[in-house]
Amino acid sequence: MLSPKEFIEDAIKKIKDQIGDEKAIIALSGGVDSSVCSVLVQEAIGDNLTAIFVDHGLLREGEVEQVTNTFKDRLNFKFVDASDEFMDALAGYDDPEDKRKIIGKVFIDVFEREAEKVDAKFLVQGTIAPDWIETKGEIKSHHNLALPNGMVLELCEPVRDLYKDEVREIGVELGLPDTTVYRQPFPGPGLGVRVVGALTRENVEICRKANKIVCDEVEAAGLDKEVWQYFAVLTDTKVTGVKGDQRDFGYLVVVRIVNSIDAMTASVAELPWDLIQTISKRITSEVSEVTHVALSISDKPPATIEFC
Image 1 (cartoon, rainbow, N blue to C red):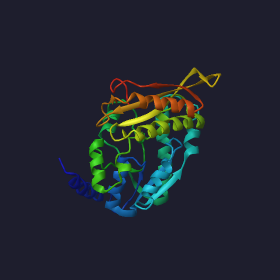
Image 2 (tube, rainbow, N blue to C red):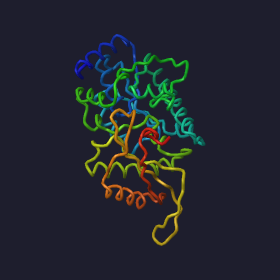
Image 3 (tube, rainbow, N blue to C red):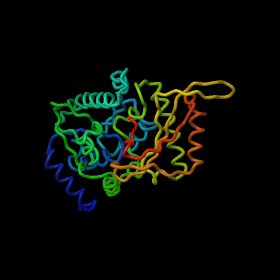
Image 4 (cartoon, one colour):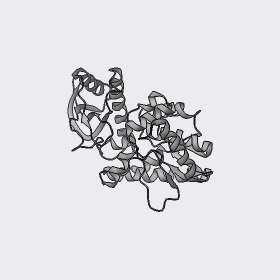
């Protein structure tokens, strides 16, 4: 087992050997996997790497600003707002796998266009071991990009054989900020896998608002480094509620908070009941479209971490 320092030295050498003097692009999400890969490849080939951060309209609140501010001066960084393109392509599709595949295809379309602009020959991906293990096992489509046959860009996957905790160790060694190294895992399809049913700009925004409340309260309680993932899911179920003196008929939101080491298995986190109550009260009072909040209590397996 290589130490983090030894892994970095070995990875940079392998990247140089694979890419040489060619140009490469990477889908930078701001999560630890793609961030570590971006810095490793930047160390290996310099500005021959273009780190592309795409807004697909399914990001969390404040994410565009956070990622841009973290990397705009450290990498050869480019921001692409493709939110309209993604949302138009997703209109009317409610099957989870269809949504994942559409998001993957549009990502490829975006990156192929950007690759042509810089004459890139390589696509760097932040694939880690659970990603390809689950893909091979046909549990889910690829978590980052659904790669179609005939893709023109050759893949470079520097952390392919690592698990999340190992990638974090590499991130610390590279000097990445804690906000990046310990940021909770976020799926490539973003809120697209946290909204059950067809995606609209309206229901994505409802999910985004509820998710922000969950994140704020978990972090305010000082539990953000103790739990693996914490988020809100907007279901396609509506339930009767009462707001003020009026009957209301709004959405059901599910709160999911789990512990894990490598994402291969996960268990529901044991949390203070007052935290759960606060989250529920804030969501139903601050997100007008929601009347009911439930708590997910299923481990992985049999459930997966994400709902879709």
